[in-house]
Figure 1: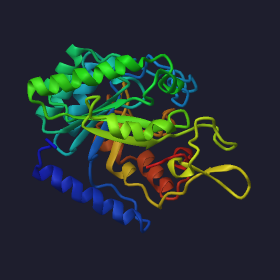
Figure 2: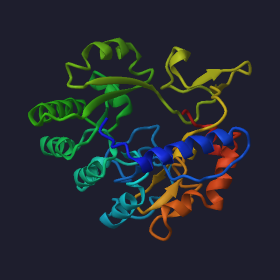
Figure 3: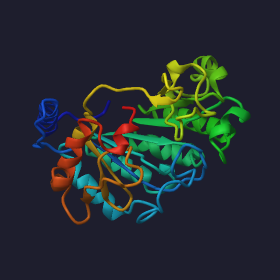
Figure 4: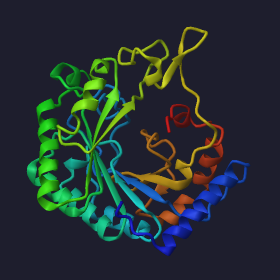
Length: 321
């Protein structure tokens, strides 16, 4: 991890954990700033993944610019560089569609921040791979939900398995050539369409060029009566069948550190409580009109956190931390 430990970051982290601990006893206050931010380089995507609000068209109309501008990005970095430790360069869209992504990563890296992005890899050319590794990117997540065209295309509609495999090679070659330290993470959603391949993923991910493999449970919509993508084995699903014959989200523990420790900032500068606010329903405000420190602790933010303690907001009811 390349994050630079500074006094301001350490103090901010202590305040964050202290405020979170107090919230578990009903005292909601904010005396810190975000420890991490997720920025949205682009809010559009080339693929039509059925359980993604961008891909399936169920999200509200795209708001603001399709790509994060230099002006918004510079405002974000100036606001968080002294107290945050991590910047995630992804939210709803495909980050690599923003040609400025390597420059954004480099500037965050030079500020001593840990940097992550996540991609479907369809736009990951040899030049982009080299630019990201050279920029000092700490981790890149490459989504590949199948080892055959049939299983891959069952979810990544409009994508190419061969392009994804090629992208992993480009990243590996660039990392070795530049002596980079980027962790290349291969991520596969656990779906019924690929469940026969999970063991094979564990055998071949390093051969494909990845350093790490993550088999991740999938968020599904309209799951109450079951879902064709839901794995056969309930251990690998976020949902369980109840005595009423319907499926329910598995219960999580009380409390959510995420809404105390970070925010999402969209392409146009809207500040959201977390990555589950895909429809921008709980916006705290906009970073282009108010400082992030004020937005992070304003009345909207405090009200949301108070409600989140008991999972009252709809997005909390679907969350899988």
